Length: 380
Image (cartoon, rainbow, N blue to C red; front, side, top):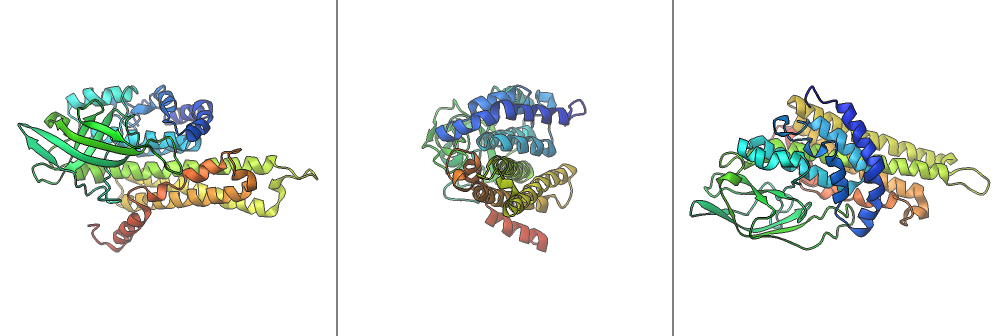
């Protein structure tokens, strides 16, 4: 982040927003499966929607370390909001990495003000977890390009304004990313998000039917898509998702501790005084803190350009998502029968924590990558 921006002050503003707005809205967003528009608007207030937008285009010019710190807090308050915010940050970071001056004014400046919401349209049913190998290709036509096909699991689908789409280059030069605007003729959305957790993130399919694009919509030179995927999108997504899951784990720990302290037996003793419960809380605390430190250290390494950053980012995503699942599972045990109802938020944290391990790249794919990195083998 720039020297003129106080990171700690930004974190404190985020924490305040989480307590005043995001957390109070989280239960209704989950139960109504409602897109967290009000929470995202609240984040625009202190400029957080411009966290990953360069200062030159009105943003905060944040680092991966800043993203992780902010996402940890948002994830602690509302996982649906955290996921939509993460995909916005990944989207604007992707645009910023290759934006021309005109594209910066067209997309980044209003995004920094919270006027445009970004996301990514990368995944396809035919490629599954290997989103970096798209089948969709553009067709050159009369000096422009036509895009037809379908993208799956588009977070903030139908709510976002900017959709960077990963496609095969029409010139056969590898991969390209073109930005499709919500108002584009031929763009439509299909389905409703019925996921177990993160119920508000509207992760649905996007259909493209002869959507007309021009060079003004392309990010960077022809064939630069792969560079953007692995140099920009992957680090931001892996570090950010690890932080979201650290936040979920910390929220579950907080709620389990409060439940254990408040729940009392007829003799007047609390659940927190039971040795088995104390051990559960200790185990949860260790796992939640490990998730937080994995995300922070990986982001710091990536910001430094450390040679070990790739392995650390992979470890962070795997470790934090596993930790979130473990912590929320134990929180359900501490909460007992009450946790299996909607009377407390523990079951929501448990459901929200199920998603991270299967988000592409899935933990299975990442474990294969990590093994190759450790063995000095090429990824592909």
